[in-house]
Image (cartoon, rainbow, N blue to C red; front, side, top):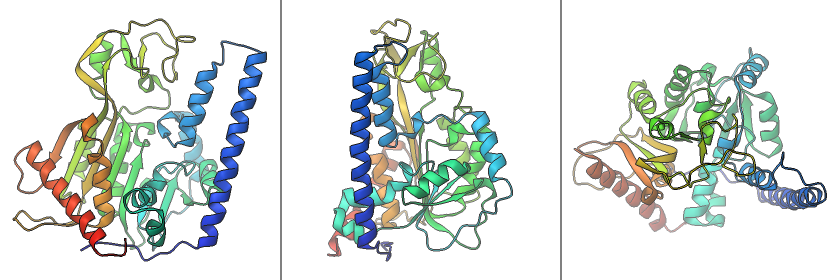
Length: 371
């Protein structure tokens, strides 16, 4: 059975958001132009132009791996949110963990619907996503962006007898003060999901391959990344969750084969650096090959709906199928770390099983005629 939202976003609200986005883009272009002019008149090596523009673009695109969230930030936010009761309200389709400023993972399902079915059809069935973040300052910005966000510690979130279709946790668990807390967050939020959990985070697997050759991925030396949450930890969290998964897939994506990648920094580069920049970082050899290949990002999709093992074509909720597609669309640039599904004996058969579910669900949705 296809699960579909019956919530319609008022057209006036959409037009206001589009106008706001247009004004923001104009302001951003103007700001970057000013930076270029200033740096041309007052050149300096301490603030490279490339880094300023790159970080600005990454923030606009919602690449939350570039947001610093230090232990001090966490402690401040935890103190400010302490005592604030957090109850999951009814009527939401997705819970976004660590929603931050409302420019990244909180937009997953609306954007996935738009990509798959077109903006007008997606608008008609636009789901509601609730963002939760421990930092009141970021929640204020999230709300200014027109998103529905709550302040609170996700571990203290009460269901209030409600649930959501799915949970997104993108580039948030590595910011936790410990990996124990990160795993607890995964297990707690999975209890609130009816159909899926979707994870994104920086890849920390095989860090020894880099360190043995005198390198590291830039984000591995950040004060804000207290937990190097790798695939083993994620697998343990999934398998330890009270909400038992019916199937899941964990993938490493965006391969890094040589030290030429700007994700790779030489050991000795300053802490909290971003992508490699020869103007500010030590020289590095660019022809060093990494075996095994290391990766830049880790993603995972977990399903909770009951799945069969027979020959009957199985479908899941539309939101869960789109979460699966978030993994499968990048299979050409990935390594499958783990895949589990009913009646499958190896990674290949598991992937085929999940892909068949994804395709059947999306085809059924499109065949209904309203898309």
